[in-house]
Image 1 (tube, one colour):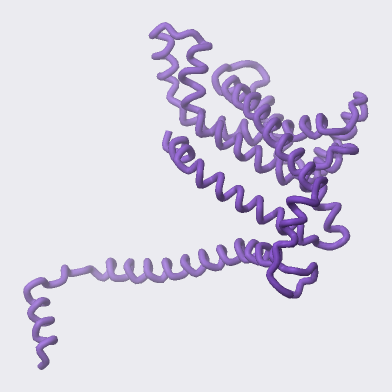
Image 2 (image 1 turned 120 degrees about the vertical axis):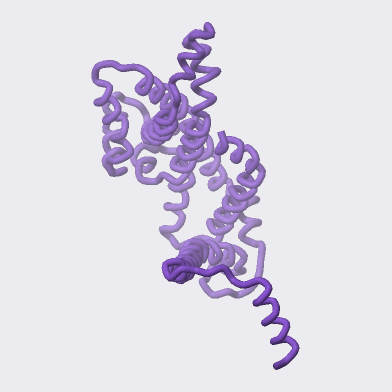
Length: 289
């Protein structure tokens, strides 16, 4: 017997393994199999999600418009930043609509959720059900109905109608997220605030809203995301000179995918990652509350 085997046998004798039951061995074997399968599914999902983004980034540096890689070039980024005034106008229109509509929907949705959850009144359940309609209805129905409504009241289609439409379909998402936060709310805190002499207004701004802040922030960020990527409803309620980024991209790709759009997408991806990195501490603080 070699010296290595003698040492290994001595260690085994000195520190024997703890006995394991048959059920424990089967559970451990099943865990290993499940972990391996889960790992495979996870890797496949990541590849499926991020491979198109990798292709998008790759072709944004292609020197030609063709799908064949002919060389590395920054020509499309140069055209994006110096020769794409209409594209940037559409981008800032989208950002303006997204931030303002998300902010308005967050204020109305938060106050509506607090009111519905806090007070008991007639038609409460019906108001709750109706508030979710824009979220469950097909977008084309919402877009057509809003277009007919704006035409009926004589409101000219433009950025204002896009703002109203985006606020309308953002409301249910904010309402739902704040309501989910309020379902976990301990209303004894409200009673304690009233016992200490706080008015309803002071209780709202100093107790209720700070506790609901994770749901409010989540609803606001979700509303911005949904507003930025919406195309169907915006298509029906937009007018001349009020093009948003999805509408501009749709009109551009009808004649073929432009590498400038690829470059714009890469800039937006980089901006999103950078913004998330800079706000990571704030998001952790909100999530921990």
